Amino acid sequence: MKTVLNNIKAFMRDEEGLTVVEYVIGAALLVAALTAVFGSLKTDLAEKLTSTISSIGK
Image 1 (cartoon, rainbow, N blue to C red):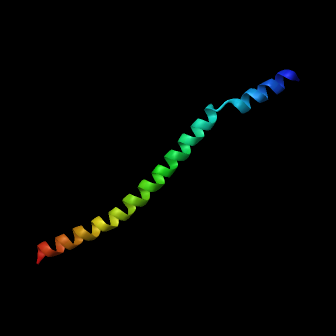
Image 2 (cartoon, rainbow, N blue to C red; image 1 turned 135 degrees about the horizontal axis):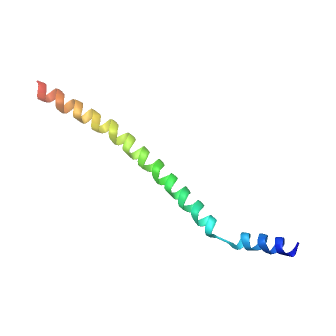
């Protein structure tokens, strides 16, 4: 029984798993931010290309 308690205490002190979770959360936030930025840029770029092509065709 003492070994089980010691293993549980050691597991609770181990922060390696927490670091992995922090990196995963950080990566997910970065992907969400990049998706939002490039999503809005795509719309702006499409509008500018359309207006440029329209003005060339005149």
